[in-house]
Length: 488
Image 1: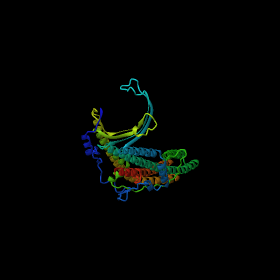
Image 2 (image 1 turned 45 degrees about the vertical axis):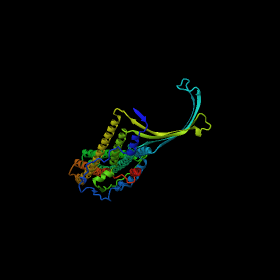
Image 3 (image 1 turned 120 degrees about the vertical axis):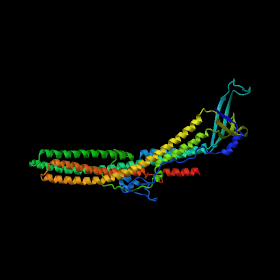
Image 4 (image 1 turned 90 degrees about the vertical axis):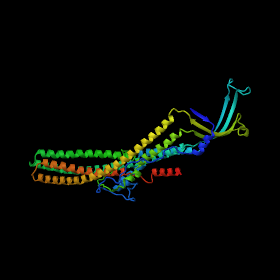
């Protein structure tokens, strides 16, 4: 039941003593285990970062020295639909934050009314001279202000501000994710360009080998089986080439969508230039908490949930509203704005829920549970971030060792193929040895290209895990500045 009563002296005293007090718990960032250093070996493609030697927040992909990738990243920032949606969500959060701040100020309204009335003939207490029909003209204004006795408005503003900050960090997180996805797709496209080049070179070699077997077969030196085996190798290489070209088309289509272009008209020129693996500065694990936008978003949502506990607790106490209304009212329109037609009303009102059958208690419990949920998600986000960094470091470390061994295997396989071809020309072996050597050499070379690409992709994921794309001048930083101004 909701009662309204005159403001007693005790309530006025409480307003003076407790005005503007905050009921939200003191906020502390949830604690998570943070190691002193990453569990990385010293021989990897990274380096300990000094305080002034952090990963650049803007244009981190430039370390791959690919001008075409630079151009695509610019197009992504301008045209990507997911990024545009995230930015729109951020602007919504900004608007809601501004809406919450408006509660700091009085609400002022004005209105006018013109109507024709007829009174009931049997209206209770109707005067004998009261007319059945009359006109009513009213012009009025009103002002209302809810005194923030218990910090409810302040907590609402803090919650709205924290949500805006979280949305800004979400925007930065989406941007970083899309940039990493584009970089990864681009590097895979370049890998497929190299695969296509390798398969075409292999086809040229297989074509010459087929011609050799045909010549030897025509001269009675080789059997038809050798010619069939050579033809099989060439056909297999053609099939692999067609598959690699199909994969390249799919990757090109994916890049087109990322940069907001139509896949039907989007084309990327072939490039077989090797992409160098960059050296990435790691920094300390503690800096990850400041660099990762998803961690910042999760932490701000804990703060928002904590502020909402104060909002829920404020429901236990009465709300005090100061109201004033005034204007002119008459039954004739002429001379409406006249001193004799004035009316006004002024005074405070106190509203309090006497019985709610556990509604307010449930609201506080729900707010506390939401805070616990947000804190658990924050800790999970932080631990997941450390896992991603360690995973990428492990990948780079072990893939580097695998690359060295695979390079040796590819060189040995090529040497074996050269020996097999020479021995075949000399008639020392049949073509089966050549086929086996060709297959082994091609697989070893393709595996080496795959390892190179996997190392590059692992470096992209490491940059993403380190929060390398979170720019210091982005919307999150702007939102933090706005929040600092609001707090003054």
